[in-house]
Amino acid sequence: MSTTSLTYQDYLAFPSDCWRHEVLAGEHVVSPRPDLRHQRTALRLLLQLEPQVTERGLGLVLPDVTVQLGRHQVVEPDITVLLPEHLDRAAKTRVIGAPDLVVEILSPNNRSHDCEQKRGIYAAHGVAEYWIVDPDQRTVAQLLLRGDSYVHAATATTAIISAVLPGVTIDLQKVW
Image (cartoon, rainbow, N blue to C red; front, side):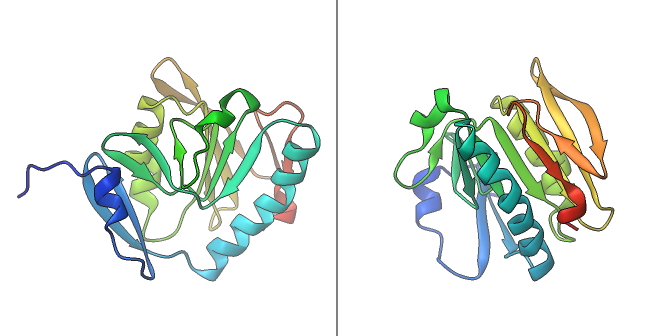
């Protein structure tokens, strides 16, 4: 067992292949790229989220971008949102620091990472709002940061209203 904790520099050396590579707590985590259902769900969320954020000047929406949360935490959320006051976190190749909203879409192979491990990582690094989208159950769990941990604000089935993006509502009937 290695005692070396991987960093963003190590992440850069990972292969460009059909796998998703992340560094969670200094460990290399590899998972298959999302399936078509997952990608379709992400697209349908983006088609509603991005125009609302852009038209209201609420920030920047980024799909499938690399986020470096800390020295030993490099993640690839499905959707990342930065508020205007945090746009300086968007570097040329990645987001450096905590996004304001992160959306993860569950796949059979990533449930424990997204619901447990990444939840703790996002909370520890100050991600204010975290959505866990479950296409099987047709729900979105909305988690809001209170102190250094998340509280479960809602389980949305028809619509979700963002807490950090004023006036932004996603019609989930158009997602499923």
